[in-house]
Image (cartoon, rainbow over all chains, first blue to last red; front, side, top):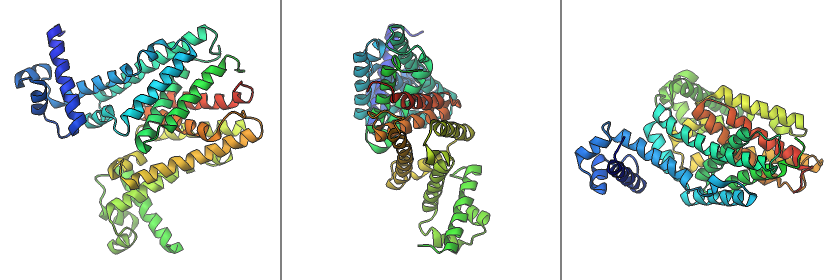
Length: 199
Length: 199
């Protein structure tokens, strides 16, 4: 466990690395650049990231993954009315529109190696946490009778997460948020009408 | 325009390259390997692909893109009953389950450069053709009164395409088709219940 001060220093290093990478690209950035930007000496960098650049990149990836969820708050954490769902939908679209065609998390995952266990842990856990929050929202709406009894919250949440991933992938390739919006809207329409629809 | 014989030779080269790439990876494959496998001389290779390996890789990418749609036929082209939609859904899931975590088209697009105009043309056109076929199916179901009047076939088709892309991306990262299936099922349930649902 890190002390409070230690955790703050580590976060300063990770944030400096994230900024360097966003500005100059992941391959160009060296540990020296990160040390300079975060005003951290070599031995301190080594203390927090003894395995070097790859370990630091993973920490930055984890930070970017955390940000994906943070950017959707407080809406994602309180999907308890259709208004809240609409606000969340808009926040997601806005977040990815702003991000555009370059995904900082994707860049890092590609660099570390998409199929390495460490990279898969970061993306896998992000999708899991994301799906869990959406599932909680669907479960809440269902317990209030606003979503149909026949809707399986976990499967529906998985579908929503897949729809977002696909919409974002197309946005990153085309620059347009059209597919992301259509996909989210279809999922929300489905949930909204499920209470009155035949199973 | 190529003669019939010319087109056959070109296809033989492209198929040989596709097989080489599937077996040995895109970076390892040389024009010599492709020539040997397709029994084509250097000057013939040069005749069909004067710009060299990159031009050949793009042709292979185009072929893999064509295959994505071919693998969904005849179902994709005749989405005129709910049984047909179910058959198509199963064909899509089966295709991507078989493909697993390695996407030949994705590998080629990454190699050519995801953001190059040529690569974007291949993937963009694939998504367009795919969406057009799904839209035709939704339009047909709507004209028969089986899909609600309030459903915009183009937006709904875009949502379906996004849902598939996301489900496949998650399958490629986790090895499981669960998200792809949930996403397709949600879209199909949405369409199926739309005729009786309030807009």
